[in-house]
Structure formats: structure tokens, C-alpha cells
Image 1: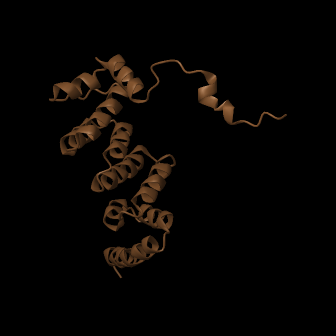
Image 2: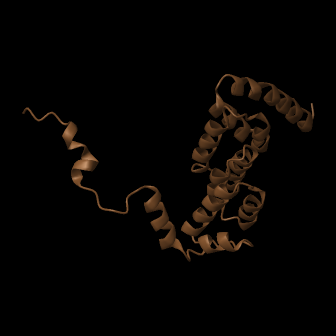
Length: 180
């Protein structure tokens, strides 16, 4: 038996086992098996809208225990691909920032079509002082923190916290039992 033939048989078995793990909510076992046979990229094909969050959370947890930087980046990239597949752009941005990959960040900013999500991504980039440069002037103002205080004031108005509040209105002390 040749070595290549044995690897093919193992890969065929893995292709049969992984769907069973996924269908029975055993995502960690599926990830561990794919890590062991060095086929983590195949995980993207097996995830669905019900399990992708658990898979990605486990992947990101596994990255802390990666043997080397290459393995860690591979787990990050797989989580990024899964988040992007399900259009979870903020989560994908967080992973791209962990990898410090400007190409992936630019890809996310280009692929995201929702204006509110784009602003959220811009605020994430601003928080990390990322070097990404946007062609949209409004997004670039957010990324460069030029109008940060205006955004905080707008948020305070939206949350109705511009005026100081009395402690009774916060703690609802009028609802306490005052017999004692």
C-alpha cells in the first residue's frame, strides 16, 4: 500500500465522519479531527446557519493553543472565512484585525453593503487605530477619529443620558419595600 493511497482513504473517512459530527452537535470533535488531519479549510463547507457561531468560537479558542504562528493564522483564516460566508462582518473584522491583515480588512469593507454595518466596522478600525484608508469621506472621518466627540454626543442624545439623573430614577428606590 502506498502512502498516498492511505492518505486518500483517511480523507474519505474524514469526509464521512465530519457531517455526522456536525449533524449531532459535536462541532468541537469535528474541528479537532480536521485540525489533526490538517484539513481545517474544509470546515467552511460543513458549517450552516445553526452551528457556525459555535464552530467559530471553538476555532478562536483553539488558536490560543496553536503549536506555531502558521497554525494559529490558519485557524483565524478559517474562522474569518466562516464569518464572511454568513455575512457576519463585525466578527470577521475582529478576526482580520487579530491577524493584522489589511487585505482582509479591505475585502470586508468592500463586500459589506449595509451602511450601518460599514460604520460599525469603521468604528472598530478607529478603536484599534488601524491604517486602513477608506475612499468614502464619512467612513474615513470615523476611522481617523476626527469627529469622535460628536459621535459620543449623538449616542448620548439617542440614549437620553445628556442630563444628569437623580439616583432615585436610576435605582427605582420608590419600588422598594420601606416597611423595615
